[in-house]
Length: 312
Image 1 (spheres, rainbow, N blue to C red):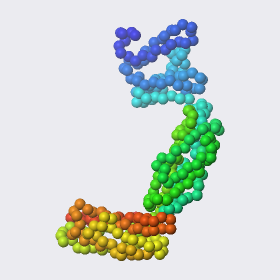
Image 2: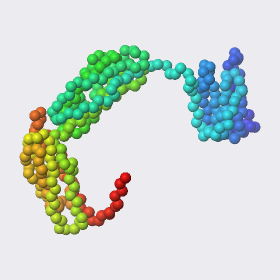
Image 3: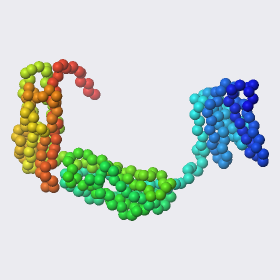
């Protein structure tokens, strides 16, 4: 390094056209603005080109292995980041890749039901190679069964859903396809499973709110009606979760459809309790004791704000 030139950025090139190692030092601008660079075959000649950038200029060395000649492009940059690649080349080498169709399975069942088998195809999509693979489930062990037709691609997975011993709600899990060899893209491959267990009983409204304003003692006793709907003639029982003394439901048993009345005495309510559930239990042909929940909330407001309603 030539000390008399100060702390400048320098480009050092080696001429590999000769049998001996000859190094050539080329000085760049003296203000240290050249702070980024990269090498890559941008002209598809089989050799890498060199690109350097500074805040207002891009410098391209087309043959850095043998020449200090460069081309400059005036262009504002962040002077640090540049990435090169042969974007018009034939592309990446083809590697085996796992693929599946479909990538998500959805199923809706009533409590106690079991679905027919749904089929997923697992294959190698890039080269047609046979890839050994294994299958596991995550989060669906209790309600999804998976059977492989073969241990190598191409193969099918037969998936059966079961709502036995499940309460109403949505359940999610995954099938994990794991290639038993290295160098495979999309490995491991995840296939999503979604099971919706339908409500045996629905309510109108779906939740119940008791609102008190102003929040001043003594608060009045309030009642609201809820319509329970479901299979006609199906027997039900209804109760408030935890059997609190400040809220009741009547009647406590009957046949669907049915209107029940929820009554609240807020003066008996503990100060730290604002939410409870109405539990509606029915016995179906496939399972006993199916519990359906209707949320109940009590709000006591010390003040309120009236806002305009805007509709389009």
